[in-house]
Length: 253
Image (cartoon, rainbow, N blue to C red; front, side, top):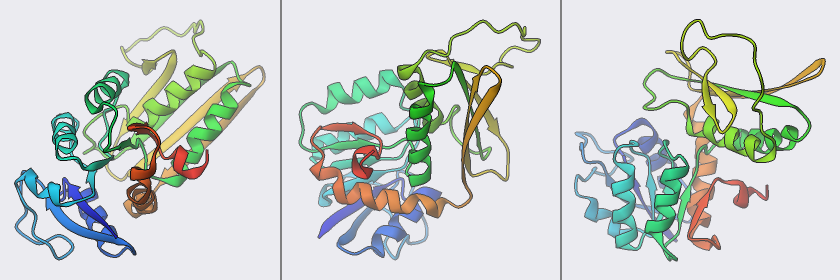
């Protein structure tokens, strides 16, 4: 039986994770942490405001905010608890900081840009397609309460495409409004949409002479993330590296 704590338990994703863990075989929900507290129980358990409660767990699932996640990870490392991280905002610099701070382990830290199995498959397909097209752009759309832009998934997609083939090219269109061409992520253009009604949506458009290829994934319910979260919890302790990015090693991709 693996004991699990949830950090950020008062948030939307934290609540879903707590409920999923409470209902899962061979997992035991032992602690909920959120510095903001919560007046009502989550998954039948009170939410603590002291991070020390996490010490009772084998694995902590981190769904907080980009501005606090790094400090939290330092605490989980100190407590010797394996960490599964769903918080976004991990650029290359942050990932390097985690690797330096986490050391050789144990425990292990698994940082997941997107827990949707479909989104992970999209990233894999985009990496395969990148070798065969001269250029690519990424378009992502999320709800307007998302804390950052671009999404962690969009950043991961762009980096994986750029690692296969640079998309840097001459484009004749001049920007009449700054930012119209999107952000430049390692030569791949990324466009972010923030509107009410969206959950999480990613599309990669590849272009070549006389043809385009589009690969798209849509998340319409946050419950779609739960199989990936449970997979990560059950396997984080067995990963060969102290810091791992993405679900791919657990899916055989």
